[in-house]
Image (tube, rainbow, N blue to C red; front, side):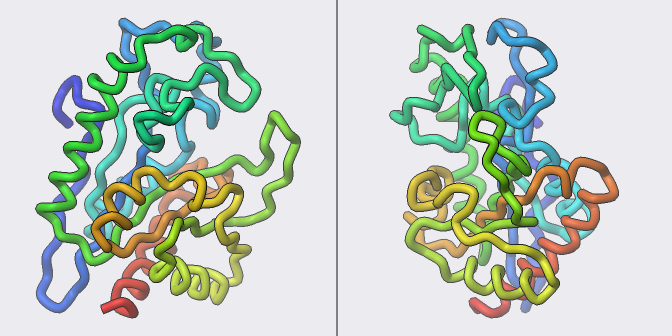
Length: 244
């Protein structure tokens, strides 16, 4: 990680003749808030889903360390700047999240946040993908078992999201269901509505991708993260081969 940058890289892109190149990205991997930004919220909220996707950093790190799937991870909380939003999205610097007001973001200098966090993150990701030329991209996110603001039940173990390119997702859904998992399709929200990073870096370039939403209680501990790292890496390898 380069100090002050809104991203870090874990592992090296692995190139083995005859094997697909697979990489991962996690836009919500951190709950870090720089000292010069005061969000005006209780510190406990930084440990909840509104601040980060719980568990995804651990999954990505384990896939990088054990399975050779290098990762591009965010190093700033989505409450500071949501890197999985387009620049003109009203929630790119969220004033509310899941029923919580974020006072420090009300009237914030959005342009300054974009210049400091959003643009460097995506510029680096673009360079990284251009250099890696991956055969498959894994986008890692997690979701809560229940949406606090609506009390909505979310029964899936994992879900695959996409906008218009479902090539990889369809294979992954079948393989995960073969493992006995409850697999959602464009749930708990649709990739046709929110798919900013993959729209920009995968679909716009014709790169196959799997956008995973994993239920956060499944990856809240190190042992569970290890289990899901193996599940996703195994599925990803089989998907990449099916697409080749």
